[in-house]
Length: 472
Image (tube, rainbow, N blue to C red):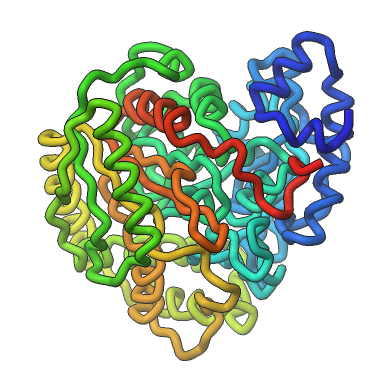
């Protein structure tokens, strides 16, 4: 199988080729290995050499034979070391899979490698000192976003059709926006965090995948959603398969659109224009569209993010082997210092802030069926814009820099609402612009319905990065 032919197919397309007998799973895997070798040197998206052999997987799953990558989010897969993008973590080897990883295997995904992340996954740009910057296939001088930057760069470049991602503050949706991909953050409780967590990062972290097409997102969600044994809470089950929602008429929806950041930071004019254009297209499709926005206490959102950062770094402090602080990057050290001082009372205050924000946005989404916003506040940033290892940063200044770049995603990590970034815009300089769509709690079905309609009305399949194996 030629690598350009391979890269031209999404996951469902590859599965259909294997199912029809046109190619074998072995031929697809060989093409994927060639594809990874062809592009990784330029995008720098792998955190370690490609696995040989691939991780064990079912040969009869719904996505059997589809090449796949997992994120250095850790722990993920039994026997695969994780580093969280840090020089201070020597490579911890999990003894068992997460429940999500077990479902990836059962679906038949062929896991070939581990993708890069910023240190501790605490940045919107994947530029760890350990690996150097992960580069954006649309413009190698710009970042691929974070924290799922390696996954996004390699999917966009055509090395794999789908890759594991996680989202603690926008870490799936932001790389999707930077790299022209589809990135869904599911509802809280939709995908189990088990068995090692009851609510990942105070309930603000969500795992799923990055794809190039809405149908891949729907089929992957069908393969992995649902509760795990002993989960603290779960989302209500869908009425039917998510793939069955593709193309379904959702009826006339009440849609709110805003391009104004709740943080008060400026939004790039092209990003704002792309968002408002999506509103006009939805109006043309028959929906009732208004410029409206929920009232958001941004200080409460920021406090929630502080607590999440403390939760992440507290895991280091609780580890049997303490990391060497001199090998941590500057902002990681600041969070470690804060974690040592953070009290139980501080944590309760943060939970109260989460509750206030969630109630406010939840009430807004009883008045509207969808909320449309930019995904990022800016175009994909040049390397070095977000300086995680800058010793001048405090926790406050770091979070302010994140809010200046990506002020739209964190809110929905706090509230637990499902949100998807779609590559619906394109700048005059040729860079992708993601637009975020948010639905009421547990309404991934509605997001997939409207996403599939927008994929037809504002198609992106023919927009291909300059660095892509999809170019023959």
